[in-house]
Image (cartoon, chains in turn cyan, green, orange, blue):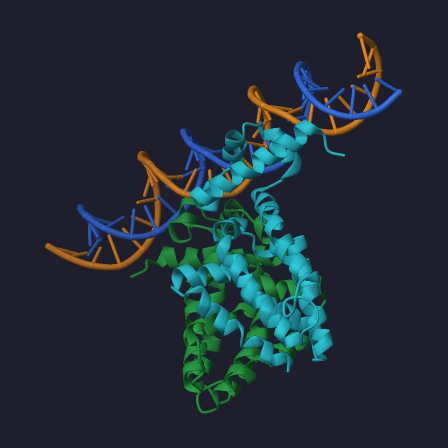
Length: 182
Length: 182
DNA sequence: GATTAAGTGGACGCCATGTCCAGTTTGCTG
DNA sequence: CAGCAAACTGGACATGGCGTCCACTTAATC
């Protein structure tokens, strides 16, 4: 069980980190910056979060949990009860919303490989995999990562900022993919 | 024009870097390691390659150029003359081969965002974009990045190493995507 | 109130990074 | 062929983030 002072500091760290990530590009935020802004020492920070990525992930997890809930128990087509292709389409729509809303945080993750190791990725992965199995397509295992790849934060950020695309355009294009399940 | 000693050192640096990247994981290779293995000083190394990523990119460019040549002027379906969907399929096949052959190098890039800024990415992008335009689909601009996303080195490496997928499985799954152009 | 385990924070050593400049090599020119 | 300017070289150096460590403090339990 978590002690009271530990809980207080965890909260401080997360809000301080959220502010800093919102204010400037991620690699310009050092561990020391976060520690100072949160009013805690370096050691305290490292105790829970060994690096920047793990902080960003913790920040995202909260928001992702809500979406996960809707996917598991919400109304169709996002929740159970609709055809796999329709559920996948709803998932893409919801993910674009999530990415857009937390763009700066998501950018803060700046993770590359470690993205795959987060709990959230495992969840998305299991969800899409079950949809593919239900749709009885071939090559499920490889297809899962292929369908999730366009949702990588780097890809989304690149589309928005370098290519000047609007969220609806990205959604529209993603909605072509569920056709593969039909 | 490049001086003789500069050219000699460039070659030394690239072969030394190739050896090192092949031998151990990328972040364990420091700039100093490369400089020492190449028998040049630190300053010389930094003169041309400001960071690890730019070295890996230089190494890859060579091999990618050959594939680019085949795409531009080779025989169909990779080269001109086939239907867009078939050319896209051939492109996926060739890319999986390329990724597989240079897996360790590709992993060395370890780039995340900066991947989009390489010349090679621009080329792949232009190619896929022209295929999409020829196929007269909607939302071309957003679709380009979506179709290229599964080819990100991180994704491929994850599929191969963490998920234990074989190259042919990945290829097989990728070959479902060209159906979107029909 | 005493005990114990967990939590805290800042000082410290380490190492990679990138810069800088004095010396060297190269290619050109008269 | 000799002399010169520009480009190139390489190692010494300053910088700064990273992660650890440990003496001290605080919270929970009895």
